[in-house]
Image (cartoon, rainbow, N blue to C red; front, side, top):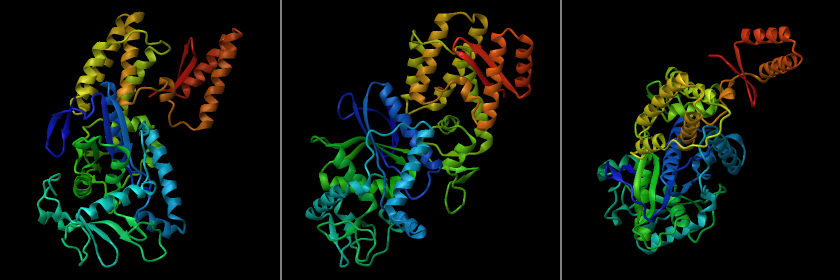
Length: 465
């Protein structure tokens, strides 16, 4: 398996720290608002990575944190007149719901910042003891970037590029120094510590959580893979790496992976631009699996331009898979198509090459339709085909729905109930051999653009496209 390392800027052969096991950590959301398409793209990229690693036989421990205490959360709580914990809880639940809707599997570990204060305090104390951190007069504690000879080695920046993105505090030793602990002197939310009441710095969270949940066993790196959005490489990941390096005497991650940005109709997604497309809104109009198929369709490292025209075209591509699935619906996969499985896993193991993966799936669908047209009763072929579709679902996370229900998405419950009622009446008429009534109901369903299929497993219907 080969992965692109953001630090080395090249594809590298993946070699885990412990044979057969993979430790993967991805920066999760700060829960002060609903998830947007950028969150979805990142979550899908690393969900795919996890699935491909597992398909290659690795046992993956996947951690994704929740930042549930932050100035943005506190400001939102103040604005709404509620406790910060309520804001964090509300949007954590919303994030979990929306990620589930697009098929993102829950992480193995989902540590919260508020549950890891002890680990952060421990790391700060280590940095103070080793002279990599210092306290200023108001009680704030800063990391001394000049004390780390390898600082900026992760992002390969120059020190002069660093200054504009950090807070200006006159007592800091260096402009680039960043906060580890912010002292609190009023009645806003704070945590007890040996340094006095305060709140942890954002960069500290991930370093401390990784140190807490991934014991290093005297290895050179804390974890195998650290992931996140491209915007996190600097300063967040740079500062994480510095903290861990100086506190623990080992590097944070062997491989660093970053996903690209989301653009909405050509503009980078940004709250300031007013084009932050919330995932919950997209899910009202499109099934989560359609969004998953679309958002995964371009390589994770590239920027993604979201527009509805491309989304509709992408859905039609997924529709072809489900129309094929209808042709073999009701079978069980008793035979494995090892050739297709091997080919799909090979391209995905090359730094998650989804373009080649989707091309293989398109080819599979075209060849399968031709083969079924030529010999629709070839049971062995249909079982192998079903196994291929099952592997697509396992490793890419789409194609697992009932194909008839897939084409029913978006109908209101009243319309579904009406159609179900007509189909039930048709079945009763057929049982009574009242074929005139049965045909009349069928014609009514056709006028509603409803296609029906009678199978050994029952009668299924869809809205014809």
